View: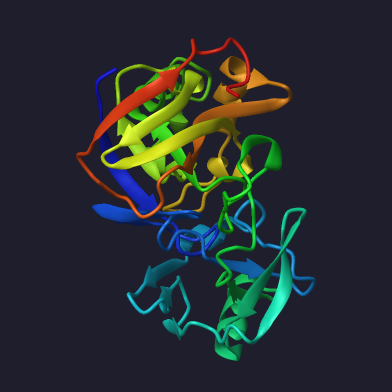
Length: 283
């Protein structure tokens, strides 16, 4: 398979707008600066765009010193410095507890107003605090506030195939969808639809990865990241064509094997190990 890296995205704050990059350092937990911040409720549970789709309209800008600037509709701009790591509390990414430092009161007030409920902004400064699913990772693997794994890869071939299926279905007016609906960290330009289902190891430029699990998709993909309007696609089409084990599947989760390497748009992509794409969940 001949392929190149078409796009790089990082998402500084979980469930907020992402940033397109031309290059990025691959750290143990994922791309540098990706999902190191998260919004939590009064019980320290994560708040996501699954329930609050307008979070996708919140635009963070990550600076070299680690601080953030935010803009959002009908809200004043906000600057958030990196919190004091001495001020930590346990927070929850689904069922996983991890320590995170707490942003200042101005950030809490700002996000509480955005969400219409008490909310806090927290920062993951403990790079050793969270491991991916143990049955698919090694003891020294780590992950950020991402749902499960350090990076998500999708391919243009699969995105094109999905849009073709949407166009042929009953909700053609909702397509074509942009690839950013799936919030991938790396978009690989390849004509081979669904080939990633069988990937096991790959190289992007100088960075090496294990492909450990297909990504089961949630209702966040139904939300237009530009308008926050909610539709039925892509889940409706994925449910007809790529539904296994009660879930819909699109993309492949990656774990870095040589943290510290850089990836650049235009890098060549080499699949080092693969199996035939399964007729079932890509695992």
